[in-house]
Image (cartoon, rainbow, N blue to C red; front, side, top):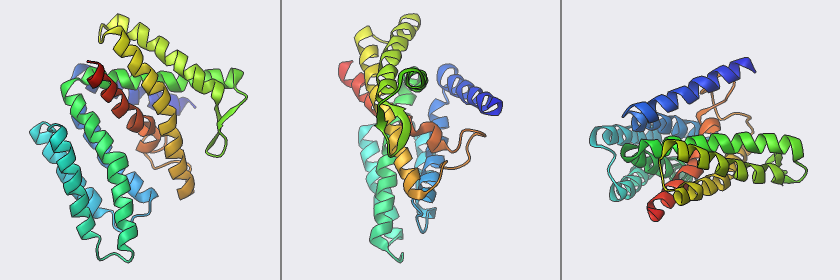
Length: 254
């Protein structure tokens, strides 16, 4: 427990340092992106994950060198990534199945993370704010669920998650958003609350989606990323789903 707490504190400190006090937050998320691609390829038992890693690494490196681009570059890169990866998998034993797995990895990992990285380049404090809201959602859902939880939210995927914890996570996340936004003076209040609501709903769903993937792969952790915390997917499952929604809310309400 102590080791898990210490490494969790290190992880949080690194994110706060990179996103709040440097211009390298997008590069850090780029590294996370490659780790996530590798882990999901292992979980999906992709016959040859090297095309995914090689092409993904090339695109990430190009993004680091060119400023990550914008919405058109996001779509073009994803399409090119899919085409190149599919072409290299045509000689697999089950090409259609392997290409489908690659498409899932690109749509589930690459697109959301690259979209988030592009916003990190423009507004890193927003990404840090999203991380804080995700941590708040997890913490309040856990505390409220342990104290008052009776109704399972998703009994098959995660028996310990409860509807009461889910609602407690929503209330707690919005409360933290109001306090943090007031102290930080980051966003207009209505935007901060809207983002908090979106994150508090999407974050648990992202966790459940990752749980379903791990359950199908018959593993407890997605990999080895932090001691006591499992793999990168275990740490970033909520961010994958919550961050893009939060960014869209921010863009439309701004």
